[in-house]
Amino acid sequence: MTMTHFPAEWLKGESLGETIACELRLAIVDGRLQHGDKLSENRIAADFGTSRSPVREALKTLSGEGLLRLERMGAVVVGLGEAEIQELYDVRFMIESFVQERMAGKETGALIRVLEQTIDRMELAGKHRDIVAFSFEDFSFHEAIIAAAGHDRVMQLWRHIRQLVMTVMLLTTGEVFAQGEAKVAAVVDKHRAIATVLKSNDPAKIREGVREYFADSYVTLRNSLPEGERG
Amino acid sequence: MTMTHFPAEWLKGESLGETIACELRLAIVDGRLQHGDKLSENRIAADFGTSRSPVREALKTLSGEGLLRLERMGAVVVGLGEAEIQELYDVRFMIESFVQERMAGKETGALIRVLEQTIDRMELAGKHRDIVAFSFEDFSFHEAIIAAAGHDRVMQLWRHIRQLVMTVMLLTTGEVFAQGEAKVAAVVDKHRAIATVLKSNDPAKIREGVREYFADSYVTLRNSLPEGERG
DNA sequence: TTCGGTATACTTGTCGACAACCTTCTCGTA
DNA sequence: TACGAGAAGGTTGTCGACAAGTATACCGAA
Image 1: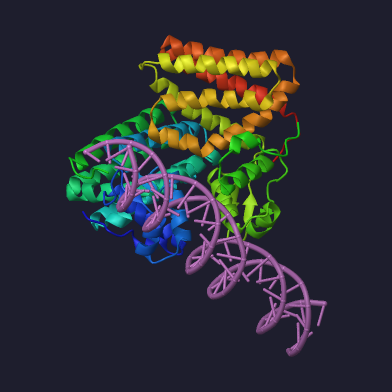
Image 2: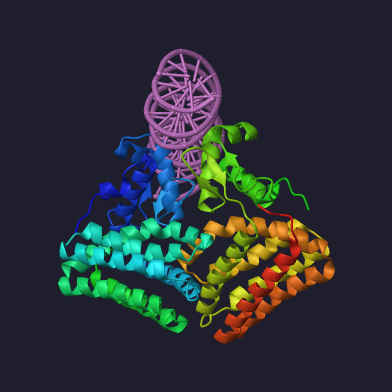
């Protein structure tokens, strides 16, 4: 699954800086840019045919996502190896645990409806083998849950990793699709399970459901990336 | 406690963009810039006597910290009211819980030594009534713990709020000092308690210690800001 | 050969300028 | 008066240029 360009419809209306950030992010996540590579603003600006300003903005964004470090002399790629992806799942787990446990007492009817719609669209995208649509719905599912908590500052944390999560999902979805329809269906089911425990409004069930989801996700991921994809 | 300028020694060697970010951050946190205020890059650049480039960088940074929103037309201040500060404590609690529980099994000797040194310096700064030094040690204490976990991505999350936390500490420390020596000593003791539970290496004790620390911190905060300080 | 110093090329931080866009105010018209 | 078109001012996104600082390469001397 080679994906040399970020889906154009995902960055409609975005600024040049955002676009460059998305392209560079994808290049880092899929391994075209590897750990230790040094990037120069001038060089990237030349590659993209822009001035340094948007590149500068993009590098700052990516640095904020932890994909690279801004040093005195050039930006060095940190990359996203297996350990880093595990860490990303740790953080997602931490955030979703916090958010979902916090939602135990609240009215979740509206959220549940949105989630079920999202899952249906996800299932449909799975049938059409539409990687971009599928991963987008997957992403939307989790973002909807986090947004529903109404915790501005946790939402802010999420904003710092959302694009990265989206990009990682885009690539892992490709791997999942390559493993056949059963695997795709399993992913859909996992989301239905989350929606179900959320509907139960039982804190213990929710906590366990989230824990299970992420434990399982990491296994899926680990199987998806047998050896390549090192960043 | 009016503090119209960010401590100069904290931004020695920082770029103009960082400096402007720190000054604006302080202005937002201490309420000189209030919720809903609109900021213009041109205006701020004129105020600071710089070009728009560093201002732009600063606004992006502050937007990343959630202190303002970048809209089509100007940046609008989100501010830091009581609810937002509570949320900030939520996030700190979430991060430190994750980090400290994760540290239960590890060798913490080196960390403990650093923490004890830090607490000693904190106590000394308290005796000298040195607000800047005291809050800096307070900040260093928590950052040292988080850094010791060795979890790059959680550290990355921390980076997004560290400056904000530092600024909030700077102001709350002023309030604490105003409440007399006993209160200052209590804050020092709370840190000693954290170091102690960490030394115990007992997960349950650690979890409870962290919980207690933050529960207490929020009470302290609430008492510190009786009605003013709205952002 | 190895070490020290200088020149060189490249890097970032900052600046001022311009174009495209949005908002708002004003003015002419119904 | 009410309303719509258009001008005017303000805003961001992007650009190219310059200065200051740093790593590197090179060259001469010991």
